[in-house]
Length: 238
Length: 114
Image (cartoon, rainbow over all chains, first blue to last red):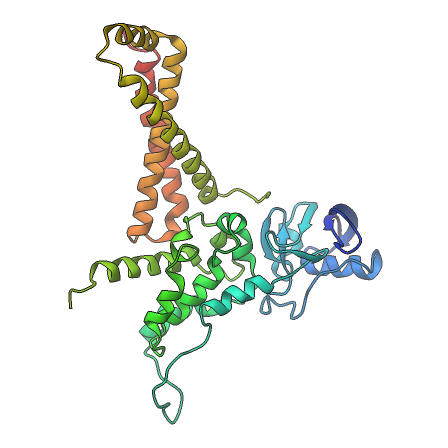
């Protein structure tokens, strides 16, 4: 067992004016996760420490937070990969509700803006709508998004402009634009081609580095940019 | 906002700063050089160019132009279809070749060749 120091950013906006740092020394096994450390702190040192966690297996995305200056999932971060002093903060750019819990209302509102559901008014087949493996491959990475918010929170463009759709919403737009079963192609593109949409991505790659599911988000955004450029130059040619 | 730097975000910061610096520079450049037809201004500018501080400035200008243009090429390549997983590799290639060209260019500017 090794002793790790957790330096956690604490903040209760209803009682405090500004955030403060608090340190805890916790004995950890190498194969334990950062989330286990936070649970130990809450159980043994300070029950008021507040954080979200649900599945604890990298699926729900609840425990996304800034770990040593970079966003990631606490349940997916092994202690053996960490230095002995670990800084834990809430996800940046979202309003803090308490300690490591942030208000993700705006994040999900942006997701709604890009119509995150299949649109197809054709008569549904008797069984499921089929796709070829090639068609499925196009959206394979994008469907693995768990909506943890790590990407949008790591994006400097989003820090500067909260009206920007952000990488998560753009990835969701890609997921349906390139879905062979969807029929709302033009409407979907229309929803991301605006001043706070697709072209506000400056290829900084923080989102790619932050994504716990290792989705190459910028590659998806770039493909939509190329699609729109091709569409722009082929207008009126048909 | 504090966040861990990685090659992509570092390149973005350099690109922004060099872009703003070059925009400011080009305004001053056009303003001063618009007076070149005047012999008095022309002579004072010629003397200014010989100043050692201006020479360092010129080397700095070369570095700014190289940084901005090489990262610009990196971004164009990535937008044109080079897989984005190569963004870090492209950053290091741009930094290395840009650095070499800067050294070759800055040497005569700073008086290395007479």
